[in-house]
Length: 463
Image (spheres, rainbow, N blue to C red):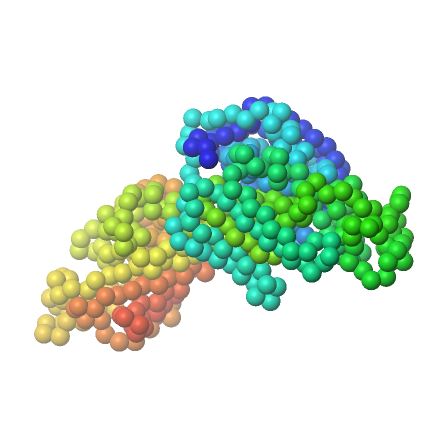
C-alpha cells in the first residue's frame, strides 16, 4: 500500500448514459490538491455545487449508492468510487454535467482505463490509514447478511454469495492485493440482476438506461421463453432476447466464472471508500449489498473520527481515550475548576463518556458541608457541562481559541448524594447541532446508579 497521497496527472473525460436515470452525462476526472479528497461537482447546476464522497452524504442505497448535499444529488456512484479505491487515489475532482455517472459496460474498467491514461501522480503528503485494531461487524439477520472487519496489515476482502440459482450457485472470491489484482481481476466485473427483478425495477422508475450491453441478466423463471418474451414486450426491448442455455439471458459470456461475486466485491470496495480514508483491515462479507455496505462504512467512519481526534491531541495512556493532558488542550478550565479527569469513550458528533474522581481534597468540601461532605449539585452539573464541552470543542477547528457557553439547563434531577471516594461517570448524547449551537442530554452515574440527569443547551464562541 502507498504511504503518500495520490491524484491523477491530467484531466480525462468519458460520456454515456446513467443506469437508473437514463440521462446522458459527460464525466471528467480532474487532479486535486493534497487533502482535497474525492468530490463530485455538478457543473450543470448554478454555482457548481460539490458533493463530498463520504458516508455522511449518502441519502439512498436502493439498487445503488446515491449522494446528496444541499439539494445537489449524484446517483449510482459506487463503480466510479471502486475505480478510485482500486487505484488507491486520494484526491480527485469529478465533474458531471448531469446527475448520474455513465454506466458504460456495467463495470469499473472504463473508469480505470481513463484514470490510467491520465496518469497517477504521487503527492508530497502522507496518507492517513484507518487501522482496524479489533474486529467490528454489521449484520442483518432477516436477510442473512453479515459483514466483519478484522485486523490486517493491508486491505483484504473475502466475499461469498449464494442466491440459490443454478446459474450462480454459491460463489466466493478473495482480493488480497489491490496493486496486483484490482485492474485485471476485479475492475472488469459487470453488474448483474435477475430477470424477475427487471420489470419491478422499471416500474419503480429505475434502470432507464439499463440494457443487455451494461448488465448480466440471470434467468430465474419457470415459464421459459414465454416469460422472457413477456418482459421484452413490457420493456420495449429491441433485438433478440432469449433464455440462454447457460442460465444467462442471451448466453452473454462471463468474463470470469465467478463474475457476479467479483462485482459484489467491486461494489463493496466503492462503498467503503465513503469512509473518507483508506483502511487496513480484512473484510469478510456474506450476501452484502449497498445498504449493509454503507452501514458498515458509517461504523468505520466513526472509528476514523475517534482515532483522528486522539491523534490530534496527542497520545494517551492506553486506558483513557483522552487523558488529563489532552483534556487541557481542549478545555480552557484549570484548577480548581477543571472537573473532568479523563474521557473513556467518544463518538465524535454524537456521544461522550467522561470520568470525574471525587476526592476529599476538592475545595468545595470545606464548606459543603463540614463533617458531612456532599458534592454540590451545581458542581455535578458543571462537570457534566464540561464533558459536553469536550464533545463540542472536538468538532471545531482550533479548539484552543474557542469556549463553550451554556445557555440553558433543563429538567435537572438529582437522585442521590455524591461523596468523597465516588467516581462520577458522565454520559452525554448530542441531540442537535446547528450553527455552533447544540442540545445535549446528560446523565451522571456512580457505579451503575443514576445520580443526576439534565438537558443542556450550549454555544461554541470565540474566546
